[in-house]
Image (tube, rainbow, N blue to C red; front, side, top):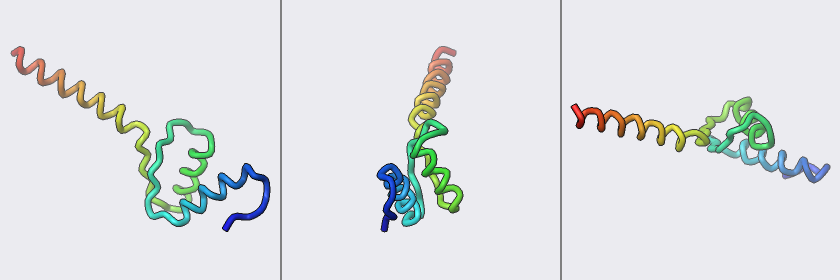
Length: 77
């Protein structure tokens, strides 16, 4: 399954093997560097569906605050 070579390349080979066997890649990547980022780029280049959940919690918190603020304003009117 994995080619022999430098031990550091084993991580990249493992990640690519996981992508190759997947229909959907779910990740949590916040930076545009590093192994996870490279794996996501590989998934995109091989036309895999990619769902990055890194910012979903932050976005949900922002939306919750907006809705809470709107509801507060309506009750004050």
